[in-house]
Image (cartoon, rainbow, N blue to C red):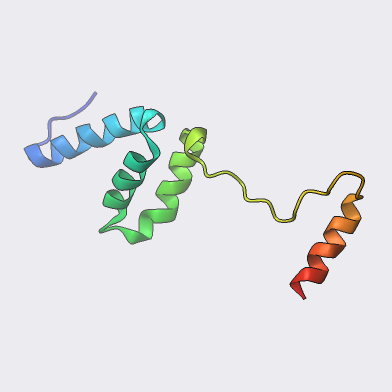
Length: 90
């Protein structure tokens, strides 16, 4: 059971926040980023926690994993690719 909130601005914020959470995955990426940045603007300490929560709730919003090493070329064994990557970084 929900209780009435005396402050209409606070109530509007709660309602809008709940609506945003319900449709987060359907929002375009730029809208998600604008809403996210606005949400953490005065709560920087919540940035990581909110990001993890949103990504867990809506996997479509998770950023793709960046490859850590190049894919092997045809016929090249994976170990050689790893050795070349290490050698290039030295």
